[in-house]
Image (cartoon, rainbow, N blue to C red; front, side):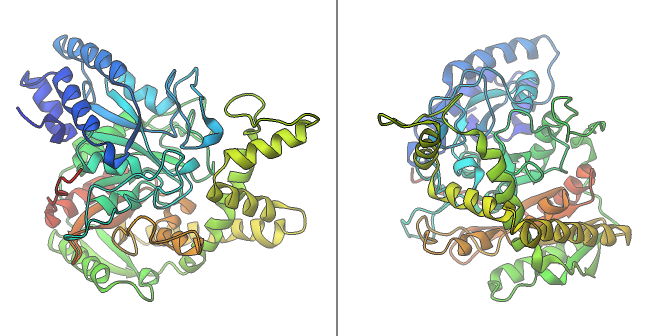
Length: 495
């Protein structure tokens, strides 16, 4: 078989079980694709030795007949996950040289299931960004191009390296994290599937924290079946994470029947934004028709506090970030600034943080510190927490009324060019999260499914939001949508 790196997880798993291919062959195919794709800047720490060692072990395990679904499958790991002995920098200068002596729970579970780590993937610094332009490694680049235009496009953020690598077939799948849309927005931009599970479904232990009440890990894959396979391996209770839930993890793949007859799909009127591109409006309407044709009932719903979601998110997330990032001080690990004679500990903190953090991280730390300060705590942070409760209640009311899933656009536009949304107005960039942040604020599962192309030939995605802990049902609805949409477009190779 040629082009083994182009396989999805399910296809590769079946080929491995049938003895048509070995994990070593799959891994070597991916490693070659990675070496040929430096122009995408997706993989920032390559680990070929670890990959081949794990692939050999996986082949032995498969021969022995004791192999879970992920065994032998080559994947990429976002640089936010701590990986033992491998640089784990969260794409920040301040963690330069940091090689953890421990493994994050999610990456450990994937390793235990036999998955093969190819390396670490590019991302926005500390997962703060929507375009992968805040990374210390430089921009990740989308494999997609607009028509005959050579302009480099963003793969989205913060999981931009993961999105680019999966879309360009450098790995079979990748881990991502989602604090306000960082799995779903990049997945939509590059035409792949990305699911953010319910908050607490995956352990956060060993994942560099951005905003602890919002962060959640999830898989980024080539299709919905692959997402179901990988999500099952990533989930499970972890006593090391107090927010991880003790719930049995179902066999998500077995729940993919494609039968959604009688399901009620909500269409929230508040997501019809002023200035939404006609193409996205049209795709949304077509998505609803596809689900209707599959036997679902389409119901107009209201989520009245949606308009407050972005402002609430951009108070809560920076507040938590300013607290989480206080630990990066140059004392125990990571980078320490060069100090002048006579400098004390205060100067060390100031200089280390000033040169270690990029502009976007500095901006969010300062916003967070401001909204948590004595005179503003009630006016900003406490008010945002109350709004968050109202947003969560909106969803609870809708689900209590019998809605099974909610269909919305995934992003307000297709992918844009790198540098097109400059630092001059960061709020323009923040607006990219308009359809995704509510899901994090409410702790719900959400999935982005590629559903069409815009006039310039770029992917557009639709988002489905599910009931808490009901990822199996959500994946099945996404599977029905994926089958109806029939999206098979791939980027033309230019890198």
